[in-house]
Image (cartoon, rainbow, N blue to C red; front, top):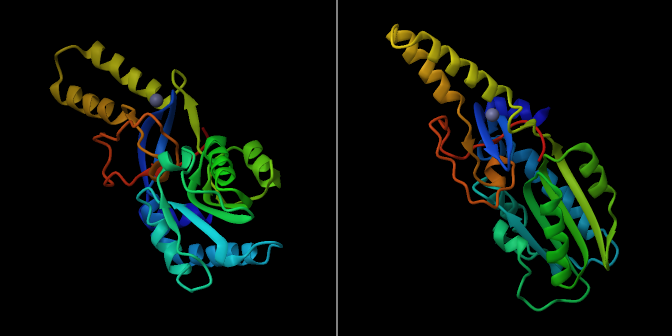
Length: 260
Ligand SMILES: [Zn+2]
């Protein structure tokens, strides 16, 4: 609720309709704006996450390698500010593509890897983090996700996961903001658009003002392709771009309500 209240205050919520992987969603959330609004809370949470790591048995704080997905959310900068003290290595910026490919650097046995992510929408990101940490030879891994957008079962599964192969794991979520989604073909926004289209067909070529009004409503109800997870709170491997006329918010729009 705090996240949504702040999002509202920051003007980060916008009505819209977009599609990703055969699902449709009906509102957007700009992570960049809401993270800016939540800066103090975010940095306090990073501090707590850091403290939890450093007090974990076997963790040498100078050996902790921190990776952050930013995806135009401003998250990296916030984290960098928290890790300025010399007790931690500076964080490294990671793209989603890099996260999903095995790293090339040589493994450091018994090291610790810390991932900081703006959002997690499905188990895919979580699995990528686990595989990435394993490739690095880590024995301890912490994944700190600001906005968990997964459904309750997935969330419980990862929060309960303490060990993956030879790695001690810990998943932490700052907020749970599940995404509301519908399957393509069962989307209420599409249904509404179709009924306006039918009305437009019925009125024929007369009543120009009404035709214009209907047409502009239909245009606004068209689903647009979503962009990336950080901005949308979603995962997209399709590289689909947000091209929509709806996007009054510079493209740094994330989603609003519930789960892939
Ligand atoms: Zn739809």
